[in-house]
Length: 62
Image 1 (spheres, rainbow, N blue to C red):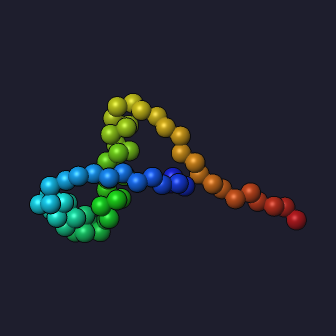
Image 2: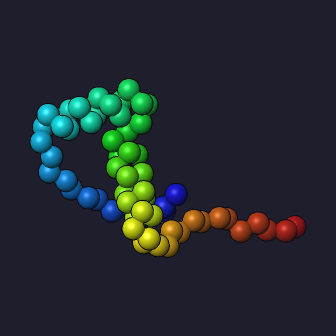
C-alpha cells in the first residue's frame, strides 16, 4: 500500500454518486477503496508502471 496520499477531486452527477456509494456500501468497501482499485486496474491495462513506497522497519539484532 502506498505510504503517502494525494487528493483527487472528481465532479460527478449526484444520482450516479449516490448509486456508487450505495453499491460500495453493499460490497463493504469505501468509495475511495474502489476508486483506488479502478486506477490501479486502468494503469495496469495500459501498461503503465509506477513505483510504490513500502516502509519496512529495520530489524535490529541484539
